[in-house]
Amino acid sequence: MTDLIKLEAGSVGDKMPTKTFRLTHTLSDHPLFKLDRLARLAASLPPDQVEFNGPVQPNQDPSLTPQNGLSAEETVRRIEDCQSWMVIKNCETDPEYKALLDACLDQAAVQTGGVMGGAKERQAFIFVTSPNNVTPLHMDPEYNFLLQLRGTKRMSLFNHKNADIVTEEQLELYPGKHRNLPYKESFEAVGTQQHLEPGDSIFVPLFDPHWVQNGPEVSVSFSITWHTDHSLRMVKLSYVNAGLRRIGLPQASVGTYPVIDTIKVAAYDVARLGYDLVKRLLGGRKRAVALVFGETTVVN
Ligand SMILES: [Fe+2]
Figure 1 (cartoon, rainbow, N blue to C red):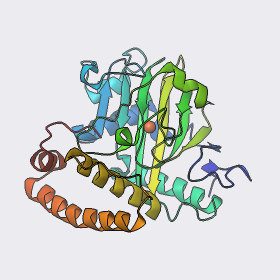
Figure 2: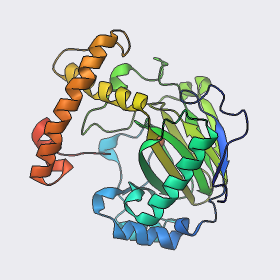
Figure 3: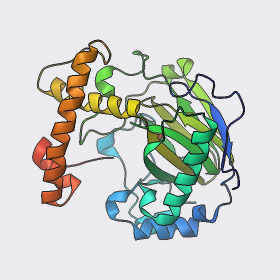
Figure 4: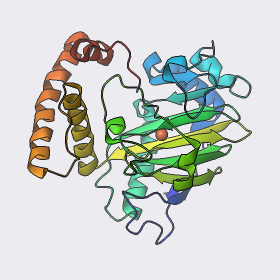
């Protein structure tokens, strides 16, 4: 099979999974990423799988995020001039994108020599953005290869363990919590800035905050994400610690008390069974979150 993803020999070393590194890919001219195909994909998916908005800043106040007044399909077709940002979520629900996601991650898993742990819970996201648009500072609760397909991007990336950038509380996950994080220009002095062109890719470690400035052209990026047993454990602990903090019981850092961490993970697994049952009975995640957590809006 053609090489879809290529890692330079020796580029990974001991970097994965905690440090960023660059790789390349051969998907820039792939028919699944032409704007007409992406417009049809956006139109075919349920509304909660396609999120889009007008121009924003790195430190965007989520409550003031501007809308662009267009449909998802119109946003893709008019992306050149509508000053918008769009993410098409869980593209793997479309069989063609699922096959491509699997092929990319299988190739990367072989080339990284087993550290991707079988690449579980695979998900794919496509970002379609207008010239000069910004993706505000945020972090993602999964491992990610971001593949640049069209246009250019500059990504600023920060170590999530640097308390001057982000606190443990800000990193904790909670249903309904907006993903945007507070940003200051002074962060740049301790970050990594990466310029991405078509054919370039970057590994984004779990929880590491980043923001993105698009170049002066339309940008299309493919984000392929996965989990290992370790990352799933970290995500579960993040949810449990956030929940305990919200009832007035802030917790020690993950790893301080390993036995307690193990008990928390077991408690999460039990609670999750109940939550999934409620979700099935109510017919959707939004309704389940509203009932269990008292939230009315859910963002990613
Ligand atoms: Fe991200």
